Length: 321
Length: 297
Image: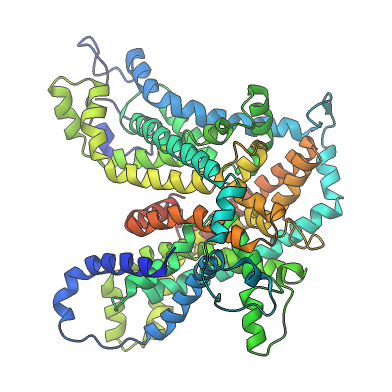
């Protein structure tokens, strides 16, 4: 029997018999033999090669690209950190950053609160509960392309149902996707429509994990439902909230699909996000180096946020990860 | 999607779910105020679907009159017949089916093999290999788009279906999922197989894989959702409209058929219906997939 060198592997592995083939193999031999290794790699190599080949290798290449000026046809020239310096002084990039932050600020808190609210509402045995769940979850399978077309239709200033309802109610018509001040709001609303299922499902699972004795005890002590929720349930959900917030933030920072399928960055660049900026630079104007630099900035921001929140939650003993 | 079909499927699945408490059902349950909250929310979530379906069945003219009618004067299939005669939507649907089917089969085979290898076999470089695969989950796809595009253009993969398929052949999530599952299986089963004279591969295919059905279902749904709905990568890699995926074709309508709402919505119904139906049939597995993909972090 061999001791696993990996700390992540559970006990079940250590109870396994030796993978070595012949009787010649000794128990004290800690290193797997070449035949075991060959058989092991036979299992994992195809998937591992594809995944590493299409991620680690391009990720390293992207970094080299970010130090170059290249349009894909002529010879690449090494420019050092110029692309990054150019980003810092590029107003269009900062516009994209501020649009992305704007969307994140609109979307993340709303998606966490909506998910929490829906999970609490759906976490009970009442009639038609399955129907309600299905109605709220089914938008999750709708693609960004379809959501985009739906959004342009529903929020069309002339023919859309939203303005039509406003008109019938005697309220002023809005420009929605054609109004630079509202376009991002519309995209956030439709993102919520499609994504509410995700946060709801996660919170539902977490709610069902809360020991019912805790809630019983609070009730017996005379807490009203409101107090039970905020004093007992909400603190129990803290790790899940941290997790969901991080996850949604990463997703929000990478917003692209819905922008592409609704406004294409307009009107007046009001919905041009960082990824949309990157897409335009790399694939419309063929600035592969500049686009890669923007991609690396995005990557580091994502990494910083993740690491930051993890450290913060560790300090507060939330153990979300 | 028809809403009564939806409610039919759902109520039947709800009855199944409610069976354990059927006994308490005999006495009338108290009315819950949560219905007052949930009914409008559910309707709001369903409204876009209703609008989509109605628009796809509306006469084209009525969709561009002002003020727009809330309900069409009569229903027509004109939108669908225009869609099928004027566009390649069926070809794109076929392309997407090919991409997703290949992705699902390939993920099931490659990720179960790798997941099993990382969970159970001992070999040099195992921990490092698995660590690298987990690390790739942190890399955003946007970082990989440009080099992968250049790589695929050098390999001559661009503008064909292969471009859409190759990135989906195996996923880090799939390996992680399958490894977690195999770790939870009792090792005694495999030992028994080995004692009976099976080799590693026979143990895997005859004993382990048949037990992995729930995990494979999760993996299949995850791969289906991702590959079916993928837009960014096909958008970059495929410029030839014969190799368009359904999502790419539909997204392209936005610029080419801007106000042909009947055709646009008919296309949208075709694009969303397969996954919606599948979701209604396998709702439980979808939710399990969402929960797992959420909790992996």
